Amino acid sequence: MVATTPSDFVGLRYEIIWKRSTNTGSSKVLARGFSNDHDTIFLYSKSTQYVANKLFAPHSEEYVKSKFSQSDERGPYQLQPLKTVSDEKLRESVQKAVSLSLARGRANPSI
Image 1 (tube, one colour):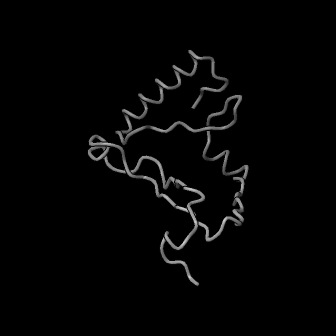
Image 2 (cartoon, rainbow, N blue to C red):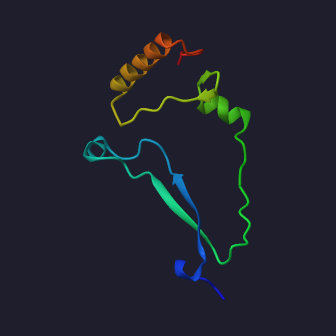
C-alpha cells in the first residue's frame, strides 16, 4: 500500500522547519511583515514502530572559517542584518554591533 495522504498514517512524528536563506525579500516586503524564508516538512509514520535516523554532516573547517568571521566562548558565529539595507546603513549597523560587543566584553568583536 502506498500512503498518499496524512490520514493514511498513524500519526505525526516530527515537524521539521527548514530555513532556506537569510535576508530574503526586499525592504518593502519586510516593512509589511516578516519574510517567508522557511519550509515546513511533516514526518508521518504508518505505525508506532519506526526509525528516524538523524542526517548530519559537519561543516568543513575551511567553510566555517570563510562564513563565520566572529567567535566567542560558545564558538564561531556571523552577524546578520535583520533587513535589506544600503551598504552605508549596513556598515553603520555593523559598527554599532561591534561597539555593543565591546561594551559587553565579547572575546572577539572585530569584523
